[in-house]
Structure formats: structure tokens, C-alpha cells
Length: 161
Image: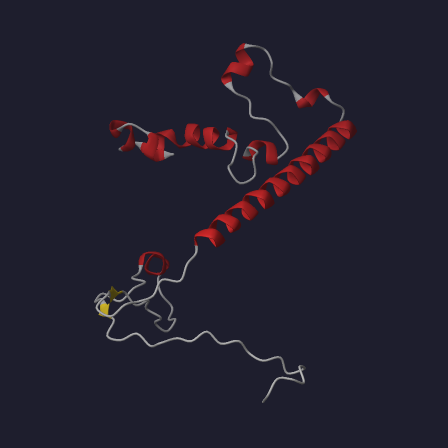
């Protein structure tokens, strides 16, 4: 959200964190379908709500009924979020499965190789921004012929060993 600020405001981004955090927490999330405020059992109080006097004050409820109302809100929010998140995950999986394909590496193509260096104690910053790929690209020299094979069923008497 900091990226939405104008250029002159970006240089002083820390002054806008409270407003940006409030805006983020008031906005419906794409995975859950609910705002973070709602997931914590309340609706955000926006300036327009105060101007229109539509702000609901939970402190008017007695303690026992507030607990019941709060519990039911949270239970409902988590149920809705869980259903919405499962639907989003299923949709993303279906889209990925439909678009995933086997891409052969052909001779002459350049590839980067992932670095799997032994884990040593590193500084936190090095872990996050360290190189994940070798610096020099490798060139594919040859491509082996791969045959699709199907393993035989050991319980099938007609299968030969």
C-alpha cells in the first residue's frame, strides 16, 4: 500500500503507516472475503460513520451478552473465512493444474542452477536477500530420451517379473 502514495509522500512513508494500516484492516481480503477488523470480531469505525451517527457502540451491552455476541461474531467470521479460503484455494489449484506443463530443456538453452549451500548460521538479512541461484548460467548439452513407464502391479498374477 505504500506504493500507492505519491512520490513526495513516499519519502516520508513512515508518517502514513497508521492511516495505511487502518485502510488495510478495513478492506476485504481476497482470500478470506472479510476484513481483518471483522475477523477480530468488530467492524472498523470510519470517519463517515461518526459523521452520520451510524457508529455502533458495543459498550452499551451488558458484559454477558457482549461475550455471547462477540463469540458468535468470531465463530461466524471464521466459518465464512474458512469456506471462502477453501473455495479460493480450490480455484487456484484448478487454474494451476490446467496451466502446468512439462517444459523440456533443449540443447543450447541456458539455465540457472539453484544453490543448495550447506546451512550455516547466517545473519537474518543474508538469509532473506542472499543469492538463491548460481551466478553463471549453465548450457544444456544433451537431452536424454525419457520413456514413459508404468510399474506393474505385484498382486496381478498375469504380470511377469
